[in-house]
Amino acid sequence: MKRSFIREILENTTNETISFAGGLPDAKLFPQEELKKSAARVMNDAVSLQYFTSTGLDKLKEKISQIYNNDGFETSKENIMITSGSQQALDIISRYNNNKSITIEAPSYLGAMNVFALNNMSQDSITLKEGGCDTFMFNTSFKKSKLAYLIPDFQNPTGYTYSEEKRKEVANIVKQYDGILIEDAPYSEIYFEKKYDSISKNIPNNSYHLGSFSKTLSPALRVGWIRASKELLEPLVAYKEAMDLHTNGLAQSILSDYLKNNTNFISHKNLIRKVYKKNMQIFAGFLDEILPEFKYTKPKGGMFIYGKFEDINSSELVNKCMEKGVVFVPGAEFYNNENVNSEIRFNFTHCSSNDIYKGLNIIKQLISKNDIKSA
Ligand SMILES: Cc1ncc(COP(=O)(O)O)c(C=O)c1O
Image (cartoon, rainbow, N blue to C red; front, side, top):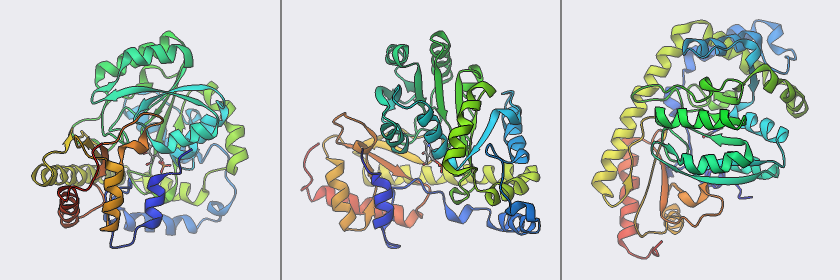
């Protein structure tokens, strides 16, 4: 198993490093004042300091189910399990499915690939392009595995989004073989044009839909969730109990208080959509100006721009860049066995325009020195 390159980078960067590497939200946008008020209110109630139930705080589960119902996806609090970030949701589901095969996208989210590997799951990768996965490959793989992990909205690492047609096709295949889809959707609310219906909405009894407050509010809260049928959720509870008894109760109470005022979260999401869209446009503009040979597709949401140089080894490039105080993630990190050398993931939500300009110019200088081997 690869140690997460991204976490290694986070450990080795200083305040001076220009980092396009992590999936870090813009800290200036955290609703600090509102969360502070919620935290103060919560600390007035001793119950917030008590043990909680394993599946999570009822009030919070109700709020999350409301978000689904507002999107026309019928959900009750019994369909929700609160987890310590969506990362734990992946771990719980993988422990339950250990030793099984799983169909995944290539490239995919490294944190999920590592969880699958630790749980001895054999991963079958299918090609992902803008617009969605190759559904012929998906059909062939899923027919055997009957379990898939997809990130249909503004994927990590590619930023790609499944079209409405692909979503229907995937749902039909899952239904046809009566298998299970793990739909990971931490970026679904960070759309720049429109919100897409989840695939799970079409297959509510054949899916785990994973959500998180990490990208929309704050990752430090470590609050995510699984939306699934009661039958699918029920066997996961024992795993949750074994892992940590329950998700941090203070964080759940603070969130639940924050969400009491509906307009808080709605206006906050509108703000981050607006700012991140602008950031993406700035990053794309500088890429076109400074590194026109970098080919990429503009994402319709999320936090990442993904693309490639024709003949540059991006793993070598990042090592040189690190010496000059700039980091990004080479695409090779997001594949299991494929030999992919020239792809790069850039995060656009974390750096100032000045740093983006500076960082991309440093990359340009290193490339033009011409001592980076061909891919
Ligand atoms: C696709 C995907 N899934 C899950 C996670 C984990 O998020 P968290 O545990 O903070 O909710 C991330 C984090 O970057 C991610 O990109």
